[in-house]
Image 1 (cartoon, rainbow, N blue to C red):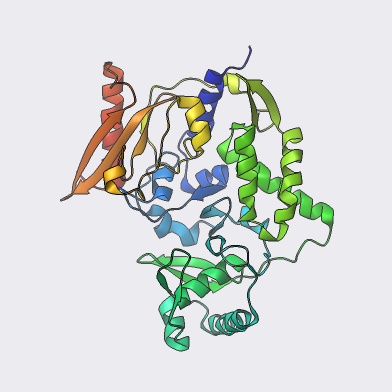
Image 2: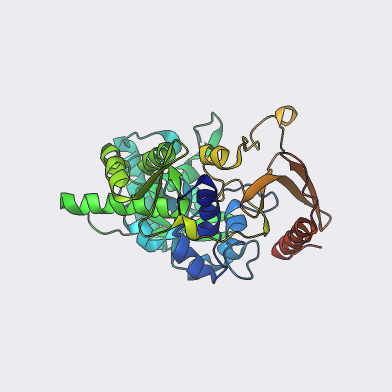
Length: 367
């Protein structure tokens, strides 16, 4: 059977929105879940996991994090990942967090980081306030032009560098401990193998991918491995040769080996997805699949928003037909919807949308 764009769209939905399993198994299957601090109505990581982990409730990830054998770190973006995936990226070079650009640490910063490192070694685990009270770091100008606590800034940089790990969160504040990684790969073949495995992990999450989107995704691995960023161009060329490939409707598409996009069944389920869900994450692919432009408008001035502050793409079967805005007021879930064309009038859609809203209420613990 010739593979069509309809097959690829259905495949993208079905392979990502797999049958819910345990939270640990969901992480093992995904490998990585993007994080975002905005709660509307919950954080992105919780909204992603609620579709893929059985009986998942908002906040479960933060609560269970110490038991899951996962890590917070940068991959193609910042998020939560399996320890085996994180191990492929480290040790990193002494560069700043991605928002600050790939600049090396000056000598004074290295000395201060070493002092903080020894302080954390003595304490075992530290709250940023403990470090700030001990060293009185003050404030620094951050990437966006505002002032940030210098301790938080330095701890985040040390975390990115691989000197520290997040052991848990307390009221949204990261608690840090030391982190020791294996040695730098001495063998160029091992280094290239690590890069290829990182590429495959990214493709596994976001496939199928148009060629241009694949290139963008691999370039984003500069956040994961700034020490190997010069080798990502070659990794892109190797990936195009290694992955399954087909030209469909004038576009080159790529996906993991031994997967057949023509074998995915259509589902009538309604789902409200976070803007960061793997199904809708790549905006170029989104437009190819669904024929309209979706934009994340949380940072757009209110008067210029067309969809809403945190509009959730509304998936019906394998079609994103509109968006929903959800909020909790006085313990009650409120919702409003917009549609690209019109609201479906069939009873199946109404039943499935009502079911999705009930699932969200349970997930949030509201009426």
